[in-house]
Each structure stands twice: as structure tokens, then as C-alpha cells.
Image (cartoon, rainbow, N blue to C red; front, side, top):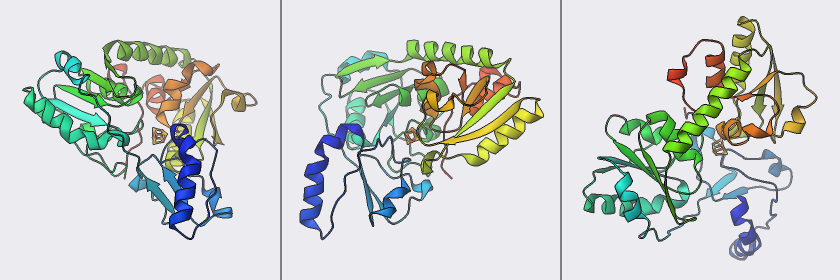
Length: 305
Ligand code: SF4
């Protein structure tokens, strides 16, 4: 379970035991997303039930892993009118799995307020229409050239930030948990400045460590090998380091001028300041090596098949 649901764990375990012949073990370790399936459960259990996240179909977690989405239908009727002046023309509507059930009423509300509303379906990493992940905003793809702005229903800024950077269009967040409305233009500029700084800092780096997550849905080992090859072709040294939980202390024993994360794309952005050396995404390595221009910058993402 994600942290926010763990306090319901005992109650849910009792309910599962009451309704089935099964016995439950509650797992206290952190669980950041559907990508985070710790196969060690099979040492002591037959089935893993992950609450709060939708499956990532392209990950093929296996028949012994069940995903139980948790839907939250929250009142945003006071927030939507505040979003209205910030929206432009045709509006693309996006959300996370918790709020996908709210999308039909949001679409209706936009149409009643003279905006065409569009909901796109992402690739094979995504289950629901309009759903985005921090690592995958492919639901935006079918709306490119059609939407003039985006409305994101959900908490946190990372998912809509990717949309703002990818599309350069206005992205308005309606946050049901914080009961807030925000536009992401300023944050977009701040993060782009931070990423530009990271690229400049890493441009003189000679020794790179390419980080690979051992979590099933974040593991991009082939990409790590390609990055190492690319770095070596450009006269940099590169070692590959695998780890489950990312923490700057775990990297202290390794000699490096810069790190590259091939794991969850959020790590390089959200945790950037915790690392003593520049922490880059794979896209940013291409810019450091002169293979991509800054004008073609985008946040890292993990595509489905
Ligand atoms: S890789 Fe990151 S953003 Fe993607 S599902 Fe996992 S935790 Fe979420």
C-alpha cells in the first residue's frame, strides 16, 4: 500500500480473511507505484495484493499479483470555477487513477462552460482514459495539436509538470486534497532552470555512474548499457550501479563526477538537491554529449511497449 492507505491495512486484511480462506501478511515497506512489485513476497505468500495503484499492463506483473485501485470521488465544485479563467480553448483533461471516475463530470462541466473537452488514452503502461503516471503522460499524445490547455485533477505537481514541459501549453491543476487551484507556468520555468544548471555542471564530468533500479517496473537495464556505451564513445568512463532504494549515501563508495538515473523519472527531479553531484536523466546525458539540443529538452518518461 502507498503510505496514505497503510492506516487502513489491518481493517482490509481482516476483511480479506473474513471473505476468503486466505491469511494476510501486511507489508510495511514503502510502495511508490505499481512499478514497485517486490517479488520476495513469493517466499512467504501465494498472492500479492497491491492497493491504490492501477496495473501497468506492459510490465506483466504475473497472475499472482493483483492490483486494487482506490477511487476517490471528491467535491471539486468550488474549485472548478476558479480554474476557468486560467483555461484556454479546447481543454485536455488528465488525472491519476484515484480520480479517473471524476472525469466524466469534469468533461460535462467544461462543456457546459463553453470549452470543448478531450480525454486521451495512453499507451500500454496505462489502464484508464485520461490517466497519467509520473513516468508516463502518453495520454497527452492523441491530444497534441488539438488541445489549447490542460486541466489536471490530482495532487502533487510532478505529473502536470511533465505535461507543461512537454507541450509548453498552460496546465492548470485542480487539487482535490489540498482544495487548491494552481497554474504551473512558474514552476515549469524554475525546474527548467534547475535542469539546465545540472546539465552545465555535468558537462565537464569525466566519470559517470549510471543508476539502475531493481524494481520490476522501473528497471531499464538495456538503456543503462546503451548509455554506458554512448558515454564511453564520447571519452567518458561509466559504471553501472544497481539499487532498490535510491539514497545518496548508497552512492558514497563510488567514484563519480555525475550520476545518471534510469529509474523512476521523478527521482532526478524531486530528489535532485539531496545528491552532492549532478543527477541527470538519460535525455540530459544526450544534451551533455551534444547529441540533442536544449530546445528539444523533455522530462524523462518510461513508455509502454
Ligand atoms: S516509475 Fe515512478 S512515476 Fe512511474 S509508476 Fe513507478 S513510482 Fe510512479
